[in-house]
View 1 (cartoon, rainbow over the protein chains, first blue to last red):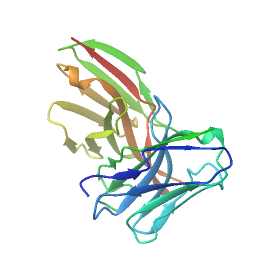
View 2: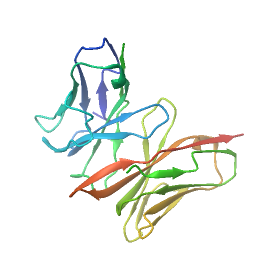
View 3: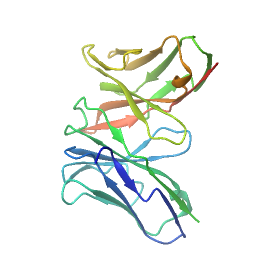
Length: 117
Length: 112
């Protein structure tokens, strides 16, 4: 596609339910990043992949959060047993190089706004 | 660990200049600047590399002081379209791996 695509755009769920957020990066982009962004704040790093390999997951808040990119393209961020504090905008970004430290800019998706009731 | 930006917010009249600063506690490999408008995704503006090379926007300039681990974004003759929140994105080595971390953000409002 022309840009980074995320779905769903909005997700409302009840506390305790599992959710899966999808990211479809720009075709050919090697690196894929997941960030969480609170209103008015900078994106908070969660995890990133080079191809299908998860290189760094140190930003995932706890073991309820997991991510995968099995074929090196589409990625899914899964949150199990959601809690109200998980409510936020979840953004995906991709870049051409095998990042970080590749001098490649990030292209961001429109994000998924998650609301946990 | 998150880079600190200053000021937190600034209001300008069209045509005025502004400087946004980004300061990190870690040695930086590069600094990127992004602008985010309300309800939209961050958009790339510029990248600054060690050694002084810059790539990016025609009307916006920036500097990168590697020794001080700081970067500044210079907005000259501001336009209404410059309004938004500016973030620096820093690439730094942490615990043996490079991390791409964003700063605290600076809200910029340009008035007619």
